[in-house]
Length: 401
Image (cartoon, rainbow, N blue to C red; front, side, top):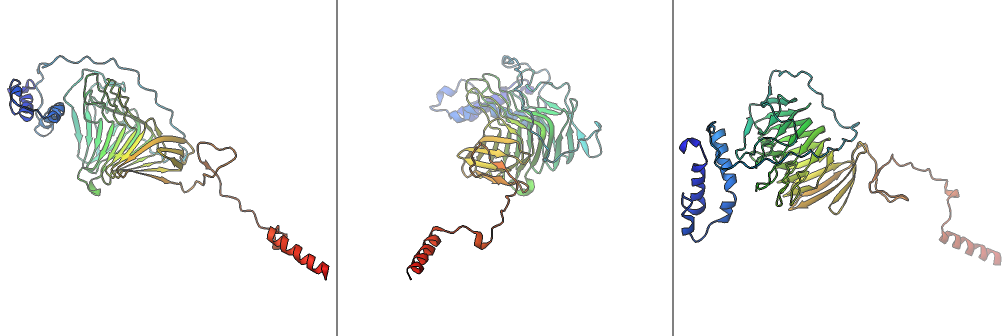
């Protein structure tokens, strides 16, 4: 392998897989080349390096020369403005942990000098750096020192991640991995801070990365992951400004039993030169309960995924609009395919009035319980036309006789 000083070994293996020969000069002797295999060459290279790092604990040489000219880093753009969270008078509150020092059963993780910008800085990388937390207990990210920058954070095996304060997780540039991935009974409590998906530089074919992925490690309820989101959290998909770029999704919920409950927060998909990402992407029987929050892009629900809106909501085609229990408004495009479902659940303390009114609005209203007007006595009730006709006939009969 040449000491892992360059990519020659994995590139030779790739050429054998694609063209049946380890050198770059023999592909012309073959009649056809599997273009799908060529398309995923970069992803296979990244997966190989990640296996070397994670499973075999082999690090690339520190003196590793640059095999190809480094791509110029795009000038960081100002972060898109984050909308002001709606009032939270009826949403559950999460108590903050005041002490910055770790407690028993709590792990504090961090990086050296992470970027304070929501857009990553530094040279583009092909190797997706990964940090795994799988010891159980609670992991806290709450300030600059404990935050993660230019890495993917993976939470597994009954480990709970809590993001609060000014904590953040930022994915590497040009990476197919999300900024944060949970599986195998992991749990996320996102109170405040932000999670930012991978930024795709121009010329990178992978597109913008997802900010958060919730998945089911082994396709059973016991191994499903779970997340809660509150008002202070910002979940931002990675941008892909190239002409064919596809923005990353803010939150993906994938797999049977995997569930997210959203009480608040801002979910902002990545902007793409060709397509933007989705604020929520729910698939493969995953489910999402929404009690509040701001969603700056479309929602996609597919393959028996379920999304549930709690409050006074109506659905008109692909548009869902209405009021959350705290009376904040939402109007969002939700696209369903392959058995994806939209469920509207009225809040128990709301009386939703969806009947037409003299001054209709785009949103159903919340009204008190209707007032029941007591009926008058039977003799004071107005007579029907048939009754009046019968009484008139009787009067005419008695008048003649």
